[in-house]
Structure formats: C-alpha cells, structure tokens
Image 1: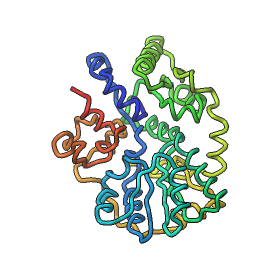
Image 2 (image 1 turned 45 degrees about the horizontal axis):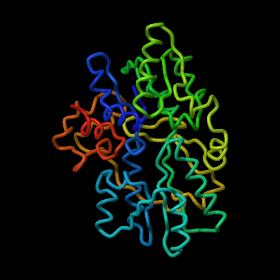
Image 3 (image 1 turned 180 degrees about the horizontal axis):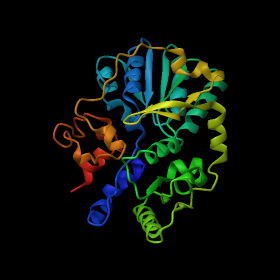
Image 4 (image 1 turned 120 degrees about the vertical axis):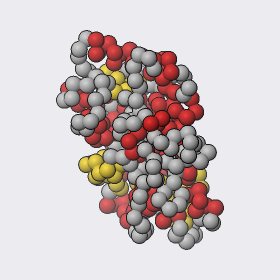
Length: 330
C-alpha cells in the first residue's frame, strides 16, 4: 500500500500499476490530505465562508470538495469570498493590505504543510496583522498508519511510505511498522525509479522473510528528519484527537494551535454552528482511503462520479486515488 497521494498519481501516470497488475496489487491508502479531511470539517469551512467580510484562503483542491449541502465553489458562485493562494505567506501579505476583511487560511495537509502555516502565524504576529487566522485541520501520518495496522480486516504485505512527510518526521518515526507489526516498509521518493526501487526493496524483504523500515529516499530523508521544522511545529501546534474521513476519530492524529496563539486560531475566534454532516450518498471514498476498496469497486466510479462532476473528494483532488485511476488506468 502507498500512503501518499503523489505516489498514487506517479504509480498510475507512469504505467507502473498497469505493468505490474498481473504480479502484485498496489493499493492506495490515506495519502491525500484533501481526501482525508472529514466531512464535518468541510461543512465547517463552508459555514465560515458564509460569514460577512470574510475571505477563505485556500490551496486549490479544497474549493471543489463537496460538503453535505454545498461546497466552497458553490458558495463562491453565491457571492462568498474564496481565494486561492499558492502559499500562506501570500495570504498574510494579502491580509495586511485588506485590514477590513477577515482572512481565514485553511490549514489542510500533513507534517509537510504545518511548518509553513506556523511561519505564516509568526509573520502575521511580527507585522501585527490581526485579521489573519488559520483553521487547522492538519493530520499526522504515524497515527493513521497505526489505525491501518490495527485493522483486522486489512492484510497489507508492505508499505511505501511518503517521502515528503518523512523529510520532516525522519525515518525513525516509522520504525514501529517493522519493529512492532513485523511489516516491511520503504520510504520512497517521487520519480518512477524511486517507486520501482521501493517495490524491489519490499519484495526483497518478503523473500528474505524479514521486516525493516528502510530509507529509500536518502537524498532528502534523514534518520531524525528536519529538526528545525519539527521545532517550529512544536512551538505553534499541539497534537489533538482528529476525525479522518473513512476512519473516524484517531487519537492524537491532528494538530491544533496552542492556546497562546488563539488570536490566530479561526476555530477559537469564529465558532460556527455546523449542520449534521453526512457523507455523499453512495460514495466509497472512506473505504478507498482505508484500503478496503479500490476506486473501481465504488458503484459511482466513472459513471456518476467523474473529475468534471465529482461526488467525493478522492475524485476532486489531483492526488486522489479515484482521480488517478480515472485519468491514467486502462
């Protein structure tokens, strides 16, 4: 199983999946940050977008993710202010220019995204910008790996681990996969050759009947990760229990801004009443993210649900498994 949306896309786009389909099954897991964002969080974001004098600042993929009753794309068509930024720094600069508006940046992502979000708060603090805040729905990868490994219905032979997350966490953060669960794991980069190397190293471990967490991305990943980035995360965030689409509540799998930074915490500053959240009817995104189903086993796949008219987030995001299967599989 690969647990990185970029790996999912590379595996499909490069033809590796089709090439190996008669020999082994490459199954996708919870590697797309937009996809794993819980439906209740999507609905909360939509309620925030409906507030007056508010601009929702986001990376692109979130805009089209359907909530229970609407989406940011639909709210924007109705007059809400939803603006796409390529970095949190851009959003802080924008907030400095438009002090009469509330700028809420959506903190969606894994360990890789959190340092840049934290630095944006530092920048806003330094410039005394008071109209910038962050809604943090960040997720941590090691806890969801434990959720996968503790699922008695899943029988994963090996894991391809996310290279970019591991640049922050380091290899040691995933040692437990081999040492506690006796499952081989390999950290991989993002070129097709990196993926093939990871698959080779996994198969070699299976043949040798051993399990290790191997660093196959040594040009960027170190044993202890990026110490500076981890310090920045630790300064601004603290772990909290978080809901994941398809998994439910996973202990200490999310990041919340520390109380001392509550002036920049949109969750604290702008409490909104969120209607009951329901998953899209007939959509199997949750099962796909848990590795229980492949995208093609969803009854909506490629018929009702397509990239142009997505029902679930896995078909929206460029890193979603359903979008990758739709765009690149035979």
